[in-house]
Image (cartoon, rainbow, N blue to C red):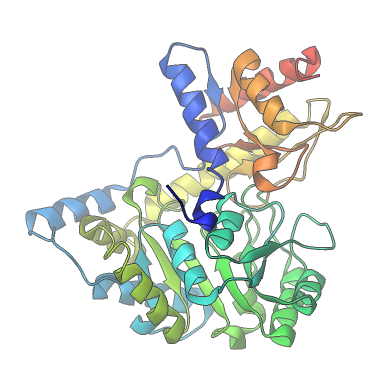
Length: 389
């Protein structure tokens, strides 16, 4: 049987694979500590649960409009208008089955076969696969830094790139572009005319002062070129509810909406009402508590990792990841390293190769303080034994 070339060439999700492998070993009785998960370890806020129960009791369990219920779309437009000092209307907002689905829809609306798309490197594992699925060509920053710069955009556009995916705070590194960098990025976007999909799913997990620096803060006039992607999964511990948002110019949203209508129809009706509760501010106490816990855990894991010989890392300013480099005189195959670390050291991590960087590993601190302390202890012991050499 003949299968589609683009689909057949797609790679699986390494983050999901390593998370599943660690979970399977633990379920089988192995002594495993896992720092693989890209999701909060807190319960969903009660406001969301109660809203979902109310929706079910009222019979709101049927199809909704394919782009989402009007109340949620309007709430999204209102909230992110306030965040970015814009004037978004309901026609600027769309609800999808998670932020990943939102990105896929928005990409499909603008990427034609052969189009070059600039991606960050390290990148979230799905970015290149999403572009390749559409016949697009991923390209990467030429300056070689851990974060995209304005010069990267100018160089990519000069070589034919039509758009880019931007991610700050970044998964996997937790790094954040400075305001000065953002200003130059915004200038480059205006100069080149490229479109931007800004993956802002970690925007509320920023440990600096004020709001996380953003392209639309630097240049509000880029509103029609920039699509915002966000959701409730990371901020409100609602990963399994599968609700994401896209906010963009009405034409872009309309085309993406047609794609969604012909693929998945509407997002889960019950989840939409749960999301409406948190978007409209009914879970702020829990949100702040989770934020403070992640900030404290960031400080804890960084302090412990500072004492581990053989590692180098930049202190993350956002998200809930640390991305250390394994210092070695020879090149490290991080896939083999992480498999060995899991099987011999009892510690689950994600290899940097999944994000386009050999020599690095991603550690999630979305776990308890005890697990963080034990995980760093196991990593230190593994490095001391040299089991990966």
